Amino acid sequence: MSSAGDALVVLRFAAQNSYYAKAVQTPEHLAAIELRDEAIARRDQLRSTATPPPPVPTTVKQLDAFVKANTEAADAQRNREQLHTTLSAVIASCEQTIAAATHVFPDRILASLANDLTQLMNDVDAVATELAGATTPEEAIAANKAKPWNKLSVLRGNYDTIRAAQQHILGHSWYDNQSHYLDDPLANLVAIRNIDDVFPHWRDADTSRTYIHGAAPDPRPWPVDPVQQLLWLATSDAQPWIPTSAQLDQANEQRRDRTRHPAGIEPTVYPGFIGTT
Image (cartoon, rainbow, N blue to C red; front, side, top):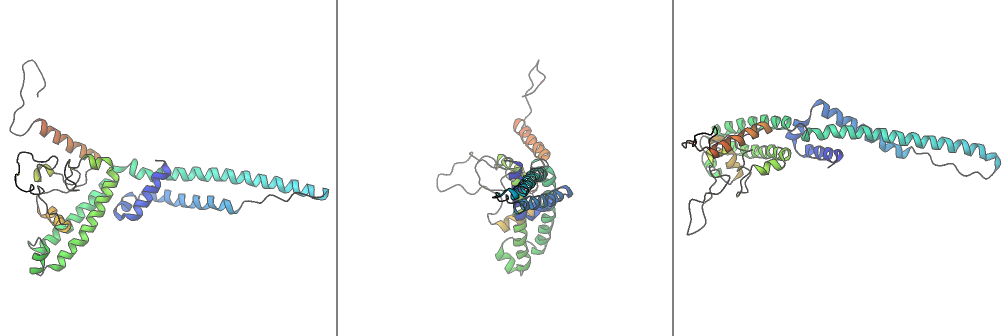
């Protein structure tokens, strides 16, 4: 995709996602948007200022005026073309700056989103305290806690907006770190830092058991309902997060280490070799 196309993606997504918009709004980014808009407006005005060619003379007396007008029209056209080229270069430079928000500085945006997620989960913690143990709408109503439960619905909407921004930035990396068999956004290393602890079989299905009658039970430890799921994130041992690229690389390396050297199993050391297996 061109810088222009990338810039349009950034601008359009920022118009749809308030958390992403806040994350990309650096002084340089805002200045580039303002300059681009002005340059586009001026370039568009060039179409309306085009000078029509002078009429062809029909007498000798009209010839000098025609030559002068034609020369001025040609000069004006060259000036417009040069200005169009200059303004287009300014617009392209601005679009490179705008596109860089996602393609050059993704960790800056992810760090901003991580702060937003932390604040949101703090708000969910506060609501969980208000609910005093209620974990379903029915329990909340029975305990006269409908008002705090309704707060969770709003917070869930904000949570989804933050995650949508994260997924937009990560692109393929989001899918590279998700479950191989579950179509669930939470079954992803980029969503829960300690997912191996709270859901050991999140990556690949547990094949150690066979169910002869009926389907296997849902292996996920969290509720399917989105609002109850958000409450589970706050009240369980799960650690929701939005990692930067370096943090994600480190988490994946730690997972590979645990796979190569499972807990409680000492690596075999062969005489004459420095390494271990």
